[in-house]
Image (cartoon, rainbow, N blue to C red; front, side, top):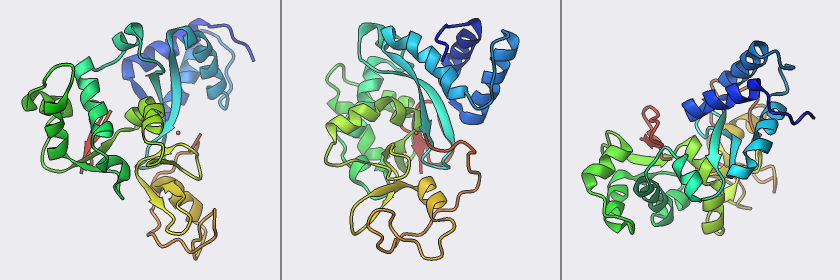
Length: 257
């Protein structure tokens, strides 16, 4: 595989950086356009190889274009994420240090998100975390602005947040979190087998059990007692894998129910 960074790769990286996160079909279109504009070899099924070239050149900066999956609909997403907390990578974040700590408090202090059955935590508890920040006290009004138009409800983690903080969550919650048995990515919102304890993302469960009249756990073969999720718009390139709102997604990383 060629590892030379071309103008096509640079254009792809620049556009992705401007978006923060990009849905798979959009990324595939961007891949084609970048190759055509800069006359770089193009193959419709080689997007991941194309991105790997960019990632090789991003290694010295502790950054990576990572592939992830939306826990809502199973669509593939790509995002540029930090792999290490250095002064350089902190400057690449969309969030201030205080805002990042609030997000970490959301997953570090409030176990409710991680251990809850549905992967959601109350907005009230999240706001209360503003008083616990170590770097600088954040007023609740400031915390509300971070979460953007916060109202009564519950919040979970946005696709980009899970992609960027996956290792942090896995390291700090080794005994509480699990990976999806199908796509092997971190699963926050998931269905769990009551017998053996394996978990599956809702979209992964929907795809796996779609053709089964009586669903059984892929690990222990016991009856799967949960309602099988319906997948309305499956992504043709489903699994490889900053909080979000249940009603509409916010770029701040929060999602409200």
